[in-house]
Image (cartoon, rainbow, N blue to C red; front, side, top):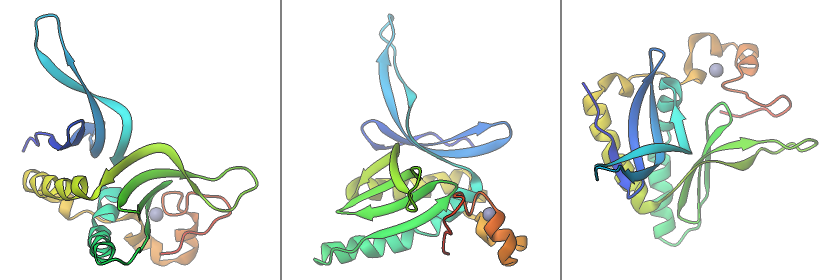
Length: 177
Ligand SMILES: [Zn+2]
């Protein structure tokens, strides 16, 4: 079934785009335009994130924890949250902002730090995103059933989990699960 992109906020869309046989989920800023005939449209910018099916599974598994932290924050507890999604991508919640962003390590450092590559959502946009996800899963039910990389069978072998660049993207930093 075709999934029509869902608007999360005025310029940010949830979409699903096939590329070389794989369907990627995008949360991405779009720019609108009007052509010379007055027809309006929009095109995706570089600002945003895309998820392989495995990364999408990993992202889905952290939604409940993010919701719980948002409720904690609303109750006055300033809880932070950080979850590895896959490759260099992390999901963080801090100060009522949800970031899905690439983290990189500078030379000589041991801690990955957030780069400018990714997207930042408010709590309100996060709740719009979740409504969009329901529509996405209705159109593409298999996206609910995909498996995160770290749950693949061979990953029960700790050495193989360590070697997987999707699960452990940094040379000298071990990601904990
Ligand atoms: Zn892996």
